[in-house]
Length: 293
Image (tube, rainbow, N blue to C red; front, side, top):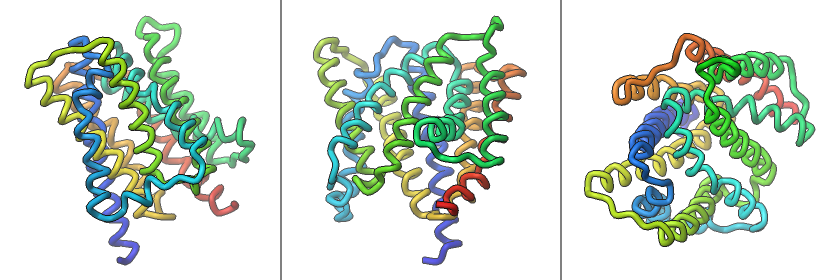
């Protein structure tokens, strides 16, 4: 398969994944308003988790994704990934869907900061410039000191910092297992934890809520699988498709307005534009860093 065809397939996969990510978050936004906890969601949505491993099993590829040569790294990644469902639920209960998605798009900026201070990676001019713009965008979204400031903006950012920093570390150990392998092990820990919490605090739900949970669980599993596949298929040309990630802000703004009457105010909208711009201008800098290694 030639590279141009690979990029088309990768772009299509990432485009669909961006829609699935937002659909999952939109359903969680609705469910969180009904006082459904993350462990209720994961318990009832657990059958959907089996979609990816079953698919890999029938393709004969499951074994290569569960083989691991350093369980300490895998366990570290899984444990740090475990709080994310809780952070997602509690954040979406208190801030709007477009705000949540926009703040999550600051992850490239946070990854660069973490790599500089903790992994001693050098940053070039593109990265420095993108950090200044991206940080300005985040400030415009959370608006500290203004009446629109919400503590749960910081909770959301904590989640972004947690998952981005640990992912940055794990990327240094990319020979431990595959990206899908990290996802499978991380999800396993989350499911075990959620099952224990569900036993302590069980909840009966009607068929409509079960259907929403099932759909959201399918969406998030497929979104992670498709985005992982997309960047793998694009190979060193990942920069040509990376900008599609920011379409999540567009989809979340449409979903937030249409389903929940939520929207970004003027300052937050400007912040979203700056965050997207910072991510785009960082791409040449990231490519240069990869080529220099």
